[in-house]
Image 1 (cartoon, rainbow, N blue to C red):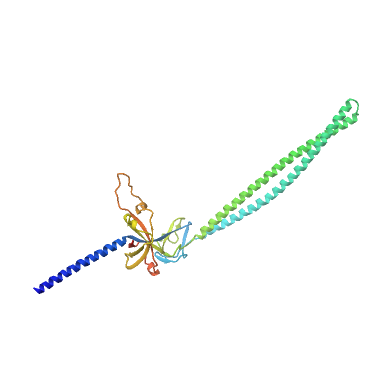
Image 2: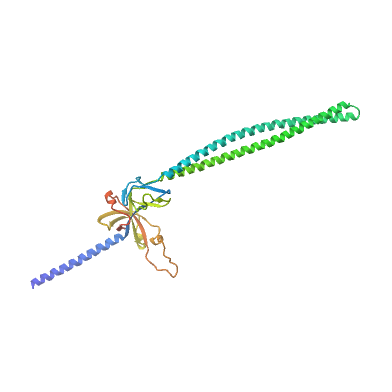
Length: 359
């Protein structure tokens, strides 16, 4: 009986201990769940740089293989530069011709300006002749009028009358000639001014042509420079879409570089948890592909829209079609310092589990 009592007592103690252990574990789990928000709807993210061709040319050489690790600035693709170099040479020649045309236009402007100034001086001189001949004509007309009046009363001889009349005719002829010369000089002056204006316009056209030819040369040099494709960043080059000897068009995709220097975690949390998630909160991260790897980070930012809003076909919640579904909001989590060896093993797209400390 005593033996059975001891066994019963031991069983009771064990049962109480188990209950206490379960209660403590449950309390610990409850406290833990209240301190953290977690989700397995997360993945490693990073910059994926798509490299496209800026020129239309044949591929001459490819200096990489798929999934190769490269450094920023490394020469990866070389296009055939024969036609591109010819384009630069033609553009340089066209620019030089445009500059020569400008010099010729400047020379013609100087010549036209000199001609216009000479014509202006000639016009002024002829105008003075007109004024002088007009004064002589007025004087001859006045003298003839006086002699004519005297002749009527026999106060002047016939010889004096004929002389006054001849002087008046000469003065009229001289005046008409000078007026004709002045009109011709004015027409010549206007013509030289029009020529000078035309040369100014020709110079403006030459200057505009130089700008155009310079732009053509810059574009040709740009194309030649971009015949040598370098890695835009350090990382893994993949998705090669070209082959040597292939004709590539401008804008065509060449390859992709995965920038593994800057990676982060994109986690999708339910909208009901957003009120507890703040920037700067510490985060624990586990990557499915590396179970023994433990990472830490911080909440960097919360997206300005739910994931559904970025879908190719966003849901239409119009009246009659609405079904309420808890939305998920992307949260960006920055990673704390990571050893380069570990960083190389983390790729965009790897699944992860994150736990944010909220209290």
